[in-house]
Image 1 (cartoon, rainbow, N blue to C red):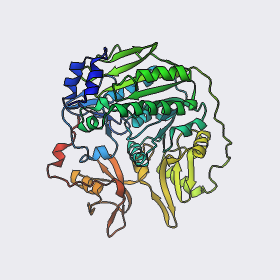
Image 2: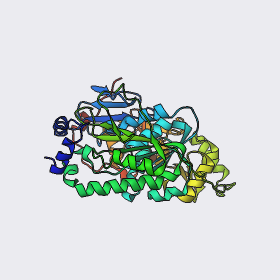
Image 3: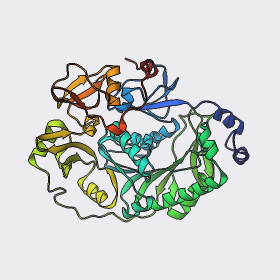
Length: 460
């Protein structure tokens, strides 16, 4: 089942039980989700908590996420369990309530970005970056659905971040890798080769080296891969520590059975191996920057937008809880940017932004059109719009953008909800109800009659 070169190397890695690993990789992947506590504070039935993540749960079976309106509204995220360990690193090494600037360098599709966004909360700014255009669009969609208002999505090569010396307190590099930890998936097996693993190792070093100048002195960089290859893991860490001026940082793992501490030439990391932990394969190491950093500077404009009007701010106050000092207008679009004004100005000058915060509304001659991002945002006022509570079939029709004819919807702008959770906007203009769910996000699959039986059930 596995490439011979992979088998031989694993048998020579003395901290891995090769037979247990091979056996575990032939078994189905564990199913796990992480809940968005800002929107949904229930727990799934027939689930067990993930030890290292306060909002993570193992499921007995894989539900149909596509057929679940709560998934589309950002109540939970389907994420592999091992990767949720970043919560422990964050909670152990990030203390106090100081303002944080955080970068997720390789953010798509959004599992770790949405997790970081929740961990940061209102005390900082997350830049979620993805260099590939199509993947950046997926990342932006998942960030929008999650609904936190502290995140920018960007699409930049790692080298661009060297223009931001000493800017970030924390950087996560979930590096592209040879994917051995995902060998339960036959595609990952067929794509593996020793040559590809070598190229991955070289690319990983380049990514970290390129982004390193943007980490402040004493800041931390979290490096992880989903592979078992020492050349992509501990050997890379040793080279980076020597080259960049860094030290590896201990993480307490005594409460979590099965995680292996890997020591290599005075550096260390942590291994998650199927058969020992319930999750996919993962390597993770934490580096602290011991060298000095420059400081990012930028001339601050007194007025970030000369187009912002009094009526814009009045509408923002009516519909949202965003601070007025974070409101900008670009053309007809009114938005709220995350973080400090000076940070936003510095980043907007240097980075290609896919999302620049939360879109609130678009100004028209006859009034304002609310944006879908507002409907999913934590900052929307609960009393700003009338609500149309949909049943399961109506909710799926809304998410498919089918003909939408629920009864009893008030006239004007209305938020469609399912189980009290916002799905998006519709507009009752009297003779019809217009569906404003984003056309690119619509459910395309046919809906089976048994669809509701295949979604997650929750405790009361």
